[in-house]
Image (cartoon, rainbow, N blue to C red):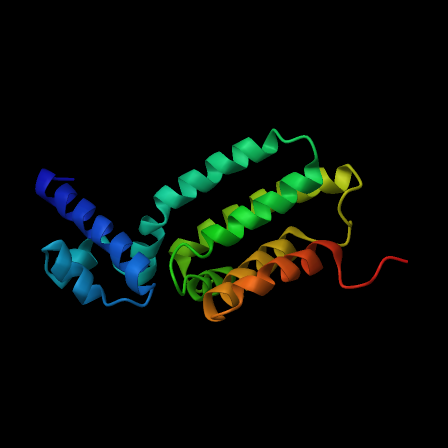
Length: 183
């Protein structure tokens, strides 16, 4: 990439992260281009779709999430590691307001740039789940996809509900332990 093109790419990406953080994933791409000091054509040359820009904007956060994954893998109790991974994943899925919607689209295979991200997160969730299952600390009838979707659902609830944050802990408990009282 030419030096000026690289600078434009980085300015667009930096501005997009700021806009996504301030206004959510539905922010105006024209506003991002304007604030980055480029025209819309330059933005679309680098990022043909909103999902391309969103996937690039999530890269640093994804790197941090993967570093956290490596820390959690060293944990002693596989069930605790799985539970903490699901919390970290939920926080990642709330990086920007409205992120749960395009991620759900990606799970359904509708947004190619984010589909790979979702598949990777689901695969990592599967690794944690298998360790917990091998230690008899997780049910064998639960799948990585179920857990990934539960983290996505909690992120969506927390994103949409004004006072939903108070109930997230209860919902996490129900997902982790089921809704039935102990026998």
